Image (tube, rainbow, N blue to C red; front, side):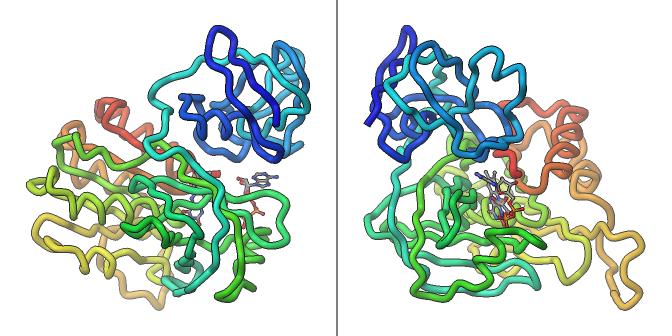
Length: 335
Ligand SMILES: Cc1cc2nc3c(=O)[nH]c(=O)nc-3n(C[C@H](O)[C@H](O)[C@H](O)COP(=O)(O)OP(=O)(O)OC[C@H]3O[C@@H](n4cnc5c(N)ncnc54)[C@H](O)[C@@H]3O)c2cc1C
């Protein structure tokens, strides 16, 4: 167990296999972060005293300049001794439900599309999460966890479900394809800032592409059930390439208010669409569809989005062009 002292701030303990950022968040501190995979760089800190090494040696957000300045990524930095570090804590990153590491058993796998399935786990101890958050799941035989967003955490905090897209040649995707109910995994969560804001009294726009389905379904489900948001419309935009990619509508149809205040807007991007397809709906990218559908109204909406990096970049630009205040936009970058 190492003691980590933040310069001009609190000290906290970091357990043997924990990283400095995760240990800080567990202890209730607002250590900045986002992706938890060494890719975004938001959790960068300066090491003033002590020794650390990175769990992920090839972290994409870690460069030569960081090395020269003795900066490290909090989500990957494992302490080798007590440390003194410099980082600016921010209350925005304090967790409502501090993350915990829990053993879990896979209890169900249900296919959603040709490449997305829902994996449901039973955790050993109750843990709550906010709608839209994610967890780190360590699969059998893998040395590093993967971030997956929950589509649902049961009210008793014991059942956690994730909608996961299989990625060609992906390491975790290959493990998941072989997993059967009864398999044991480790879940560390919840993490993430893209959770439903029940105190924001605005119409809601959820935009999902591909692997972004899970957190957007979670946000839409919770918004539909929220009494604080009862008078608000919920628009769900889902983007896929072909018809076989489309999903999410049956989950929304199960919600009270579907077709009245809850609306599903599918959009397909393949150009040209496969000749065998008979698609008469919206074509293009989800950011274009959002701008076409809502235009001026966007700046009065609370916007949540999740999906692959190019989609996220295009949505950010589109929201900026439409003068949507940053405080109304919620996302955790996927990598
Ligand atoms: C915040 C967040 C939420 C996400 N939510 C979902 C979701 O709900 N559904 C979904 O399908 N996908 C989600 N993803 C993507 C998911 O985490 C994986 O990147 C994706 O499934 C591909 O994993 P793979 O192992 O199959 O592919 P691979 O190509 O083998 O792995 C790619 C990804 O794994 C991570 N990675 C690789 N090596 C390491 C390492 N040593 N340490 C830590 N991370 C490493 C990196 O993020 C990398 O981009 C999310 C990602 C993030 C960051």
